[in-house]
Length: 588
Image: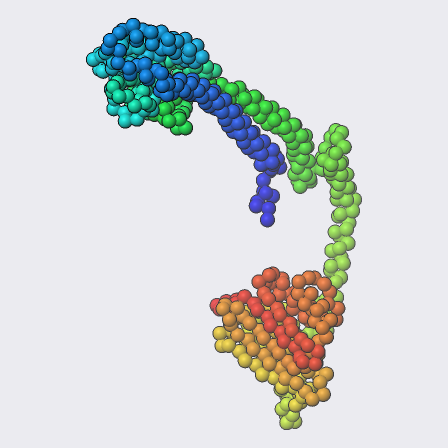
């Protein structure tokens, strides 16, 4: 199946080949390569950005954990708790001595140099016998009004709390770790609260380690409030800003990380706002390279294919032009043939053929036509003479005379046989009737069987069963008669005791079914195999001209729409089934 390609011009066929076999595969390949490359570059860039954010988050988490571990040291320090809980009612010098001997060293020099994130350590105590200075402060009414103190009072646990607190300038730009110091039982019921302020510069340095342009936000998870940001245009120190209410610039990529693995920082999130140009800049550079490469891959083959296609389409059009001239008896040859490829050879052969045709027309063709006309006239005269000698009417009249003489002598059986013979001859000589009805075919079959029965007397018996609807169906002439003849002559005649032929013609599901069975000598397996092979080939069947002729005509009329099944076994007769499409006789 050529899908109508034979009607498409050669140039258009080459374009189809180019677009289907070259352009489309290259285009699809480059599109896929472009998508895979850009996705890969984008994924790598996003992976790097996520890695930087994760590293920055980890650094902040480590520093906070250091501060928490420092708070644990204060929380579990027995002497600190004892010193701050003791009641110095008689002698203030006693507290000063205790403070200088241990608390001063602990609060001012022992820990803060180790932890770079710690700015200041303050212990708030509700003990009126102390002198409040040097890192020890009184829980005054002003302290009780602060947000961080309210948070620690509401907490039922001694775990530290990370909270944003006010600096000395009144701005909430300090992160503090606040913790209740109740590890030891206090008989005096002195309240002690530890407050560790983190160094703003250290936090700023951690959050500025992101190696891409963009802003970072530290978000309190429950309220989604901005607690810290590197965005210099945002007044987060003095105003409560809800992150979800911020209008983000178009094309901003938002990456949010949480501290789900940390108890203290579990209520905080880190959000990074990255301009998409940071990601797609490298994607754009790689895509430009891919597009340039794709253009080169497409343009170069296109130019080569156009150049090669033109090299033979132009010459083929020239040959076609000269062929059209030959059809009008203009035998002009193709000039200046220099190419030596197949088209060049074709052009050379065309010129030779043109010159040869011209020579034949001029020198031979006219004389040859005169000679052939004379031969045809001679053959026609011979045929006319032969027809006049063997006139069918003469033959039929002679047979009719013999039949009448037989009737006059009382030889009715002989007369019937002669009548059947005449009817068969008359029908077979009417060659213009290529197709006949089943009824007409049956008339010939009855005539033939009566003649055979006359020959074999009681040796041959037959039975014919016909569906009434099958009489008007048309079939190729002598389709069934040939198999009746083979069954009689090759099947029944060799038998000594005689035999029987059964013929059934019926209609099954819009198919005309011919079923013939005899109980003759049958066929050898080798002959049956050869006969079945011929059904699917054009192999010569030798002396089986009748069957070969029928199969050939059935193939000619019906092509693949008919079916023939032959089954035979030596000594057990033969069965033949033919299935043909139904064709009704056209009545006028």
